[in-house]
Length: 278
Image (cartoon, rainbow, N blue to C red; front, side, top):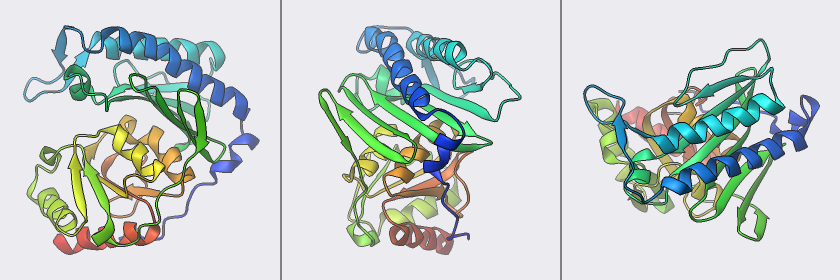
């Protein structure tokens, strides 16, 4: 179990690319996606299932929002690569790759619950250096560029920081759904952690990670994530002072079973419980 993973120098992004251009792209692309998602939120839109067995929903809102984001990236950074949830990967020789999940939490979206969000991130040589989560229905946006984590709600713009909670017994904890922990190993791990925390709330999707950055949630634990589910959120959490890794303390860049925590002490306490459960 690796509990001493080095943190990335998020504030060095400015030595690699124009920070203002990245920030403008993140905010403008989120705004372009907003027009597509809000137009269909809480409407009787058609839902397709991407799985032959099980249920992984996708809608025109997902596809249209990603198309709008991609168009803006290709206009401003035509040589960059793109990885998206709904459309084909754009390969590139550039060290920069954009990561897109146009609607993280499509199940919430089709249920009319405003905890879904648009995720956009920027990687440099495989490491997430900037990211954004926008919840257009509530008018909230979290983003991080150049090592600063910020939050906006209508006219309010402010920096954010995680809580100082260090003990599991004090941790307000969330997971998207208990069904995520479907294997015996993941069930044991979740039980070992969740039975020792202050409280558990389900159903927050990407919104839970951003509440962690805001200091309202202390820990998020998930299983079976894709890279697009977590990569754009990593810079926000880290710039706000938090830590996010896999359950074994490795990089969470490629998804998998992940835990995000407000402090290193809380993070290591969760990893110990997970390791002991196996």
